[in-house]
Length: 455
Image (cartoon, rainbow, N blue to C red; front, side):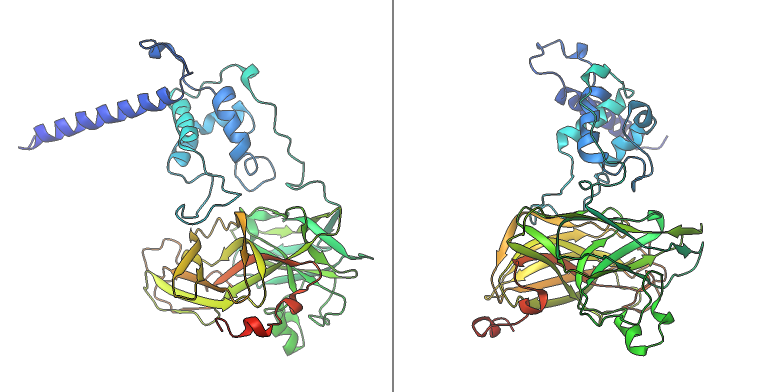
């Protein structure tokens, strides 16, 4: 024992008292109201059926059930009990449910974050040995669809042929064109992508190719292909760049698209859907046959939803850079209602931000995300934001290309834009609603009264 041993003993005792007090506070926070003073010790800890299961139903089971992205189901006590301590630790550190928006900026309708009372209840339950309690206290079971997180689809379009994914190595972006055979125009209120091998899908983008489009017209329909397989050099370039409308973007953890009444995406009669699949290998060979489910609007909407993007293809990230900043900005050509955001980066992604730059130079941050490569989420505004023509939008991304980034494949490499996760991207997708009679081409026609503002 050294000369400071008394100090260490005092500190250890003090910490123990603090931790004990914190545990008592957690349990006290979940005592039934009206407990007489002095009778607190007789109050039981939170139980699974009464306190924990309602939280799991509301916040966790959308992913934690069979067939979904999470590794284990949390529907029953028997399934949940072995994970009690890990669940308590994950929610206390706010690792689960996954949500990466900085709470100082914006309010979002799909924020799954737990309240401090919910975190306390799960912690107290785990600390008490994860008691089951009385099954009669359980809420009614949550009704989950067997296959879909949206309403039962009116149409399901599936890649006709499975894609074979190797166990190792990089996989070139893979495309499959699927004919819709729609004999009339469709307004899509909800859409969901369902990979058959989600563990291998880094992301997927589903494009709408109308019948008059020349995009990838010589590419095969109904079978997979890559850009390098196309004989036409022009079409090899087209595979990576298009002005076609996006139906939706998918990444692990992202939610299906559900548009409010009076809003929908437009798929013209006779269109094809072009699936752009980014597969990654994980040591096990597999095959994937991704589907998209569509729910059609019951009535023609007043507003058409289109997906726009701010991206910077010219990014060059130097070796060892810990906080490298890349930005891009543009102005809206016409009025629009801002609905949601979907930032996209790769393994060196650190933070991503969307801003409005006002005429006086002040910056209003709409969303700031502490980026997580394995959980690429969409962020849907609680209140849609009306934006005028000429509004200047800016996207800013920060990258960690240093050895301190545990996901960095090579901190000594200069990183540029590229499809593979060893390269980088900077894409700020965002959804807006515009008049139903206006398509994306018409939306980008700048009128005289707005053409000089913020250009």
